[in-house]
Length: 371
Image (cartoon, rainbow, N blue to C red; front, top):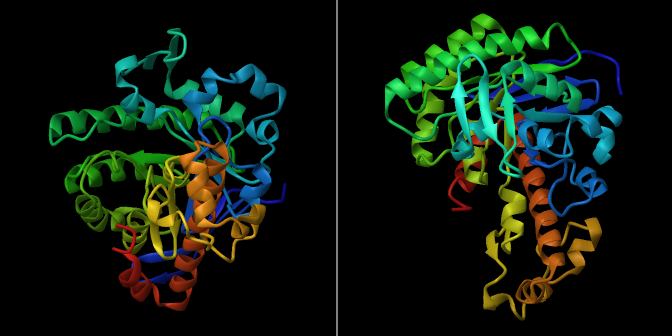
């Protein structure tokens, strides 16, 4: 632990793209930043020490899933998730709002009570109110806590989106009251509004009135076209406070990240690197590589000659192809590690180019490279 409260410093800008530092008692987070997803308290298939070697600054955990298991009693015994999973750097936790959408068959919304879930594990009733979500995140001991929101599915229906804004704003107020005055941690509000500029601005303005330590864009990367996501970011990020971090939830591919950084977004998370790793898809500076493809059967070269974590640069594409075809778990582990390593390299290059004022050239070179 280091001294100091939660804070954000905007270091430099290159047009709308931003270079910054989020300061927490558990360490400094350089932005733009990618947060690997550890839904269950683990980055699937990757050892904690190896995550540190990739220069990952912060990971993401999930309130709903950690509430189900291991549960708050276990987490209390370990004083939170950091000691439980042996991760000493910052953790951000989703509030459970995304599960309101993704597990919609297992829950219903009650404006007063919150989200009423039927556990997808054992059918047990779980009431996740805005207050309960904050309480659980405090037990997890998250460094960045998200308010509970209603994240609607992709829709053009303004009535549905407006209702979600009303509920999310009310829950944001209740979340902040429950959060209290804790200057060591950050509390982020979440803007909704779909692909409509007027609704997004309305949601942002209501959140700014409540006043949060950071602001997230929710309800994107839910099935809309990439061009539509970029458009709504272009139209609305200027309404977000300049002196607070901006977080685009659930994004994404390298090109998603590049396009969002161009519009002034600072923080990202996605299961993409590890989920792709489990299916044999590797991200490299040569582009995306599907190691299931027979053309790699005799390829003697590694995915990245510069990555010596777990001696990854000593494993040929031929060997990885063999592991996949043999259904060996080591394939998932090695490719997932490569992907996290690549994503963090990619973010370092983004930050370097923003600092040098050359982000536009980097953007042009790579925006369509991974499609």
